[in-house]
Length: 332
Image (cartoon, rainbow, N blue to C red):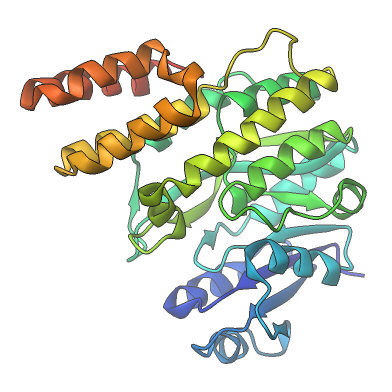
């Protein structure tokens, strides 16, 4: 019986599906199932998968489409191996990915998932490191080991886990339950909190083994513009706070997570640099109206004061961001 499954939840993957499949076929651990779950694509993704992987890939088609969460759950339903990865349709894996993460989960029978370091590539596959990615490096400096409370506290400070880098233990996922289908952008983050509360640990693999794609058409970029991403994050973090305290994984006096603040201020600064001042005001209004704890936060207050000052304000905010990235200020 194969030991693992690469389940690819696919929806109009386009040209990026080919390099993903090629990277999976180069794995040094060959004992895996390759499964494409096509969510009613209209661009020939299934045919491309068969062209690249031949008989090695099994294709299942959803018709009608199930959406992101529904398709992830369909992938899980089709898994018959002890471990699986939800391999995103436009990312690339290093050859030793499966080998190294399987070793981590075998060494940690308490862990429901393992994950590794990841770096971004652009639409053309060229690697780059954004300030946000450099900031996430600070979360790797203190490994919690098998301490679930420490993992929960670290994840509450910021979602530094790259979703396609996760290898799940199938039995743990079956016990934890399905992904939420009402979420589009934070369903992975919400699930990891729930996995910890269900009694399973997380194994960190401190190796760069995944390259995930960032491009202008990404759904997360569009969601940042209309604030739906931040609304989901606020909802997920509020539940993580209350449920984490109830489960004894977070301190009773834990404050608001800085993660939403950091994500929102990062995106607002990008808007400011691009001259999208209305978008900056729109994001700050979201904090004022929906996250009063963060509206009074010192970092938010500083941003509110400086962003209206034109070029001097952008310069000072740029210095502040560089210091935060370098020293992990504000969360990590």
